[in-house]
Image (cartoon, rainbow, N blue to C red; front, side, top):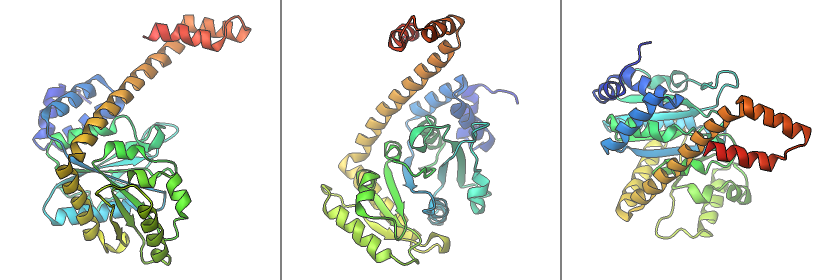
Length: 315
């Protein structure tokens, strides 16, 4: 496939060319030089999408909920971009699930752009490329971008770093309040959604959430709790209204600007870490390093001394 000039690719994507947009995100995701240039163009465009993170445990119904919320957004006549974080294949490193499989009903809608991205083993289910891809979607004209996490069953606080509004999805019978606090839900949730609310245990789950909110130091904003049955598209309009209410509050209070500032600094840190990690990987394959590793195996140099030598070489 012929490689286009990054500026040309970015301009074509901004004019609605979806194949160019897809290729631009692929460059970003693979960490190629063209992707770095495209990400820079997107950053300097100053056209920011409002990002909504949807997270929760596996099986909570995040994909179905996202699909139903997309339908609500399109019903308001707004375009929407979606980044679906998928598990990585252990063989190819690519996303196991595909965007067309996850949300088929929107695949042919020109007002919806859905992109699956692989976690590539990144802690918290987010790849380094996600914030740059979200920024690119904003630059090409999408007013809002949904980031749906993989739901890896571990602490997913990292999604809060990538979203202006974070939605935590739980199910009836989700577990006790102590486990919820351990999961960090109180720290990251701007909106709670109890999905599959047609099942027993909704009242108890709401009670647990309300009790936890009562014990939290929330300031002047209290996360709303919305009940949905996403498979039947029930409550999804109310869910989107709650998200929009938080968006309005965050903009009025200055929270949006504060979060975005923190986000770019965190992004810088992760990019630096990735760059250094790549250099370390190359260094460890160096012939001279391999000889030093043999010396470590022989006991003539200890791991910390060798690490300091290699760090000096990297920096």
